Image 1 (cartoon, helix red, strand yellow):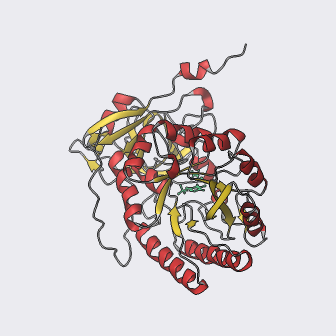
Image 2 (cartoon, helix red, strand yellow):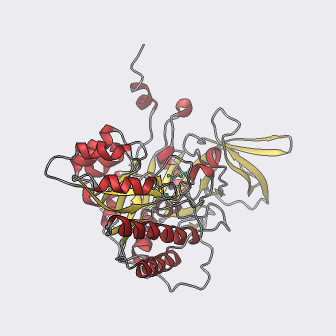
Image 3 (tube, helix red, strand yellow):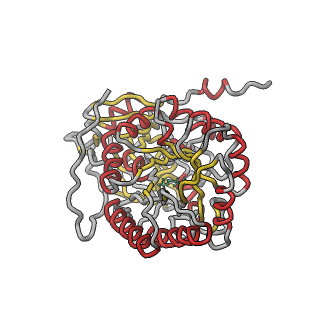
Length: 448
Ligand SMILES: Cc1ncc(COP(=O)(O)O)c(C=O)c1O
Ligand SMILES: N[C@@H](CCCC[NH3+])C(=O)O
């Protein structure tokens, strides 16, 4: 078991934050020409665990969790488990003092199983099942986020007599932010939350206040994902404080908490914009203090919910080249994974970085497209990337920024089996999640 690391000292904030790297901070180029992470050569990991394989740098996860905690020492930092969850990850987050955002009974049960404190868990979901709500109440989660009006009485009826469940109401502030329409949740016309503009948010607050078994502790909003600018969050603070002010004026209530969700951008390729927690913290907390002072409201305790920002840059996907093919004017490098372990290029058109990580090459680079092994022409992992011209079957390729929304969104497409996850730290590697075997897939098939 590794001990918690000493708190990292963050360097003073530069005027203009420099570009963030797409590789974990522990990445080194070895004398052999290969690449190591957490002190472990990636080629060694590919041999030991097979490919495709996901590698997660424990110290990178811990340092990124600490970056948010030290940027916002008076706030709660709730890691969004949907980005990537497993028992070891939960332990690291618990040791780093984070809270946890879950959106299903499955994520909740896993957290409970590892002993993650239930009062530090917040349950989300636009369509929570009876099992989600029952599990949340049985385990005693700290907060449940109300996402629709119909959910209010349904939840209240499940709360045992004599107790109260703390809840937040998720509101839609009418702010378009995020890298793709599929991940923009701050605007009206999508399935999450209750709009401020249409009055649905205020109506829900009034209904929750009418339920003695629910304790409304504040508002929640989540604008979307891959947001690189602090501006939309500052606008969200203004709109949410505007609603808080109205709720106090009209209904005589004030709340102790405000949850601004996550969505903080990371780079996938050199030059991509990333969100830095320090300017976020500075601008969001000063805007909140200012707006609350103007409205004569108590300043609520802030919660943020980073998922991708903590897990994404800590993960590297490893693939082995199976085929190299030139057709027309295009050069394709086909690897042994693809859209079943990384659906993100197909879903959102995301562009990734790829590096030859197992050996050196002095052959000049050529532009090629790295594709997966699945039965779709759209199974492209990285379009038009520069790789050494002598790439050949057997080579190991590494794809950084793969720690969030890959393994957690992996599928059984073509029955290839989901990849394993190995953790690296201080020169050691250990398996966290084993590969899904053909036997695992077969045992679910119980009919004739
Ligand atoms: C409610 C909520 N909080 C937090 C997150 C985490 O988002 P991200 O991983 O982009 O930080 C999500 C997913 O977008 C979400 O739906
Ligand atoms: N799954 C998305 C983002 C949505 C996050 C959950 N609300 C991604 O891969 O980027």
